[in-house]
Amino acid sequence: MPSAAALLRGQIAVLDTQLRPLRQQIAVLDAERAQLAAQLDDIKYPILTLPDDVTLRIWSFVLNPWNPFYEYDAFAPAQPAIVVASVCRAWRALALSTTAPWATITASWEHTKPEDCTALVSLFLRRSGSTRPLDADFQFPGGPEHSWTVTDAFRVLQPAAGRLRRLRISFDEDEYDAVALDCNLLPAALPALEVLDLRFFSLAADTATSIFTPKLRTLCVASAEVALPLGLSLDNLVTLMLVRVRLPQTVDLLRETPRLETLHLAAGRPEEGGYGTVGGAGVVLSHLRELWCMHDKWDALLDRLTLPALETVTLRRLRDVGSVAFIALIQRSAPSALRSITLVDVTSAAGGPIMAALPPTVAALKLDSLSWDSHGIYLFCRAVRRRHCLRGLEHLHVVQPHTGRASVSSVGMWVDMVAARWGGWAPPESGGRRLGRGYGRRGRRRPEAPGGAPQVVRPGAHTGCRRGAPPRPVAQDAGAGAGR
View 1 (cartoon, rainbow, N blue to C red):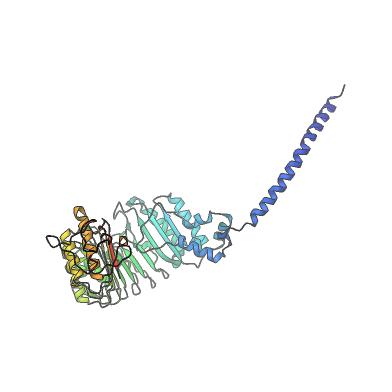
View 2: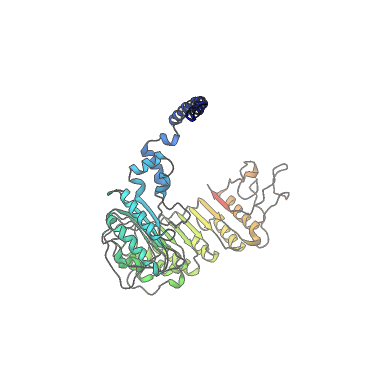
C-alpha cells in the first residue's frame, strides 16, 4: 500500500502535467502581448508629434482666456492647467516640466473650500517659477462674513506681487456691495501689473493708499470712488471701465488719464448713481478712440467730454436726455475719424437726431434690439434712402429690427431702403439677377401704400416685371443687413 507521501507526489505530478500546456499557452500570449505593446508604442498620435513649443502655444489659448470685460463662468473648468495635465502621461510630463501652464491662476472661494483654494494658489505659485508674469482671477463669496477669505488670498499672493500682470477679484454680485475691500491689502508696488479688475468691490470707509503701477493699461472698477483712493499710477492707462455713475469723481479720474483710448461706461444701477456738479473746464481726451455708453444716466458726464479722435461709439438705452448730451459731444468734438456707431435699445425719438448729427465719415452702422414702431422705421429708411443722413454709410447691420404685428411690412421697408440706397442688391430667390433701384427690374419704383409706407409685394402680385420673370420674394420676419 503506497504511503501518503507517494500519493501526494502522484497528485503533484498530475497537476504538473496539466500545467505544462497552460504555461506554454501563457508564454505565447505574453509574447503576443509584448508584440502588440511594441506596435502600440510605435504609433504616433498627431498631437503628440508636435514640438513642445507648439503644444504650449495651443495650450495658451485655453490657459489664458483673458478679456477686460470678462464675466465669471462657474461652469468653465476652474483650473485649465490641471485639465491639460490630466489628458495623458506625455502632456502631464510637459506641464510639469515648464512654468507656463501654472502662471494663470483661477480660484473660486465661492465653489471650493477655502482651505483647498489657498492650497491650490500656493501650488500654482510654486510651479510657476520665480520670474514668469502671473495672471490671477479670484472669486469670493458675497457677504461681509467672508471678508477673511480675501485677506487670506492676498496673504498667499503677497510674495509674488512683483510678478502680477493681471489681477481680477470679484464676488457673488447678487449681494451687491456686500464686500468692502481694504485697500491696504493690495501691495504698495505692482511694477508688472497691466490689468486690474475690481469692478464688484467698494472700498472700506476712510481708507486710502498709493500703489505704484507704472505699466497699468486696463482698469475696471465699480466707480471713480474706488479708483481715486487707491492712488494708482494712471499715466499709461489705455482702457477704463466704470460701472456706476459718480460724476465729480469720474471727471477727476479722467483728468489723470492723458493716454486713454477706450472708455466703457457700464449700466450701473440708477439708485447707486452719484451726480452733483463739477466746476472748472471739461475734459479733453485727445487719444480716446472708442466710447461705450451703456446707460442714459451718463448724460452729465458726456456734457463734460471732448473727444476729437473718436472712431467707434456704442450707445445703449439712450433716451432724450442722453441723446442730447451725445449730440452736443459730437458737435463739440468734431471727430474727423468717426467710422462706426452701434445703437442698442435706443428709441426712434433719440436715434433719429443722433444719426442726423453724425458726420459723413461714419461708414458702419449697427442697430440692435430696436423698439421702433413702423412709422419710426419708415422715417429712418426714407432719410437714409434720400441721403439726408449717413451720406458715407457703407455697411448696415440690423438685429431684431421690428416687433409685433408690423414685422412683415417693417422688413419690406428695410429691404426697399437697401435696394434704393445701394442698388444692384439681389436676394437669393431672384436667381442671381441684380435689381435696380427699388424693386422694379426696369428701374420703376413701387407705389407707396396709404400713409407713405412702402408697400410689400407678395408672390403672384403684379411686380412690373416682364412675363415669365420670377416673382419678387416676400420679405421674411428676419433681420436685415446690407453692404457694398
